[in-house]
Length: 614
Image (cartoon, rainbow, N blue to C red; front, side, top):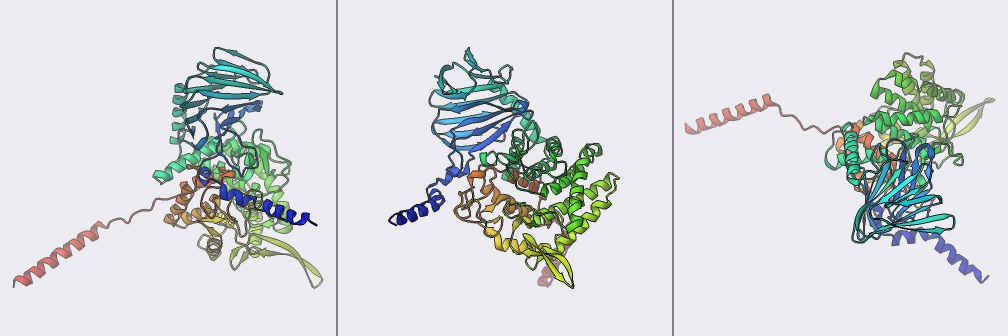
């Protein structure tokens, strides 16, 4: 019995760990990302730990380093490279040259991985000698002429001018220390048996390709910081794509370093909307090839090899509608029928799966999309699949294919949505089924759960109902009233993710998310309220990590929540919103009217003067 007071104290302390962490956390660090990806746009990618501390991440802290080196079909090369000079990391950012710059206590470090090159480099400028640590479980290596060659598959060549090497065995690992008496220099890393280029040459190659790619983008009607955010978002989406297999990482953060089909679909749509068709097609091809034979997809895939993560057993069926929406969007951007035809068999399989359930129950089966919190008939999934069927009917019509089934299914599904999901406050987050018995007969009915959910906005943006309809207006207004937090929109009423459920980097429940806030911005654009849309775009930029958009923002302090930042979907949504923005036109001057007014003023002056002279 004497232990009970101590147990209560212990339980109290454990329950308040997130709060204590939040109070002691240096929130300035939240404005810099802890992990970022770079890739060569062909087959290789690196995961960089910037050394920015994030005490909320449920993984061990890593110093400034290259944590993963990915080499296409070879997979991950078992080598890590740590930067051991210039002190602690203070801030980190992705530049418009697509390099990662980390400011440190006594200098800075820059990572560069030029497109179409098999070489990346780590450039340091500081006050002390250059120091690096290479760890590997590959015991076969050689050192010659300031170069370390590790006999992995493929081999790695690591070169530092005037380097001195020290090799220490650490169990099954080799720790290879590299240093130079210089305080200014570059560690060059070549993947495969290729020659080494100097840092100046790499910079030139990088500048040429990055500039050409960005300049080939559609330029939205925005300027200044808004345009800079647009280009930065394009780069983060490009960097977060597996250059070999085509899928996207939800985030470079280790807890989100997976490929969610939903997030990837929006990333691909953002790229094709902005003019980068080839990058988008790479994703749609991967998605088509990854489809399960029954017409659905797994929810999450391994980012490095594109294979399904079968341990993540959460069914999410919005993927069917998003694939259909994405391919119709691709056709609208290209009008290339032969390009689209390669995806028709996958669309047919998805429609076949949908038809079985829609004809049976009027709805798509229960799932956990979009927020993975409720296993229900969720509005988001039903609406996205209805929109997907609508777009498929349009696509088939454009391709001169029979679309009668798609039109029928879309009509049934949309009728069910409108009948059961809508309440006096707007569209419900989900409905629950019940069977009613009357006159000896049974009838399946659905009861709406009236709960504000910002995911209801995007289907409205995409045309589920007319934008100026009462159903749309009521849903939008109710969502704003119930979910506005610190200038942005929370996901749904009572959201504890990031606060007391799974992640603990928020000071309170219901943190506003970037994507949900941008759902509202897109609605404002679609309804001609461009100043309101621009304000929300600005809100997103203000709460970014040096223009890298996070998943969510602290509801009290306003800092980006660091554990899941940057989020690829956030950047993709900004791109989509930016493309849809139309510049507010100033009222044009009516020249004829101005002339008439001028004449009247002159005549009036003349008449008054004449009268006065009399």
